[in-house]
Amino acid sequence: MTEREYRRRTMREERRTPWLIRWLAWSALILIFLAVGYYGSEALFKAMDQRGALPPDGVVSTVEEAKKILAESGPQSVAVGKSPDVKIYTLSAQGLATGNLKIISDRLETDVERTLNTVFASSSEQWLKGVTVRHLFRNGTALYVDLPQAFAAGLAELKPENASILVKGIVRTAIENFPSLKQVKFMIEGNWSQPINGLDLSSAWGLDS
Image (cartoon, rainbow, N blue to C red; front, side, top):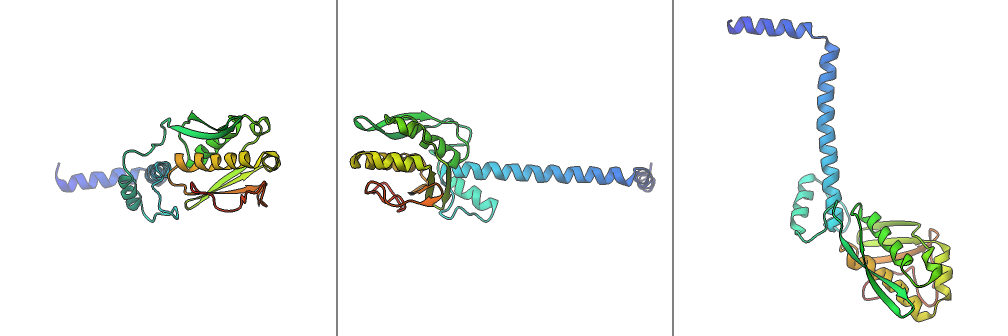
């Protein structure tokens, strides 16, 4: 068969293939490529989030930039899908108590929320065991923790030194275990809190607070 005859035969076969089938085949191929790119990028940025490798504003422009930041963050960071141990600091009858918690790594915000809820549940204060985080979000290196009114009411009833231990334990737990966080700000029922028991919860709390 000559090259000319082969081309004629190929053209006849293409004409016999319905245009709808060809269109569906090309559409399916394009969707496959889009899906691979989307989920691949999502996994990449999730890994960066866990490692605390995102820039302070949490924004990168390209996948290449993301890969570079991820590579520079070092092998010591936590990878998505692992079960890292986190150290928690909570209030006990004797003052500050520590413990360890193993979490299934997911999104950073989810991991922080689980960790802080464990801080509350592990406390010797019975009222605190029923407290859970309402909402939690980040803005750069700052973590915003929205807590229920029950937390504010219970905090107000503690001795001033115990109230300080509790708040500082929350801050220390968040910042020491999640390197991308440098500050913690508290809200009560979605609003900035007034000072409670001598503590200004609306201020930015860090390890030196």
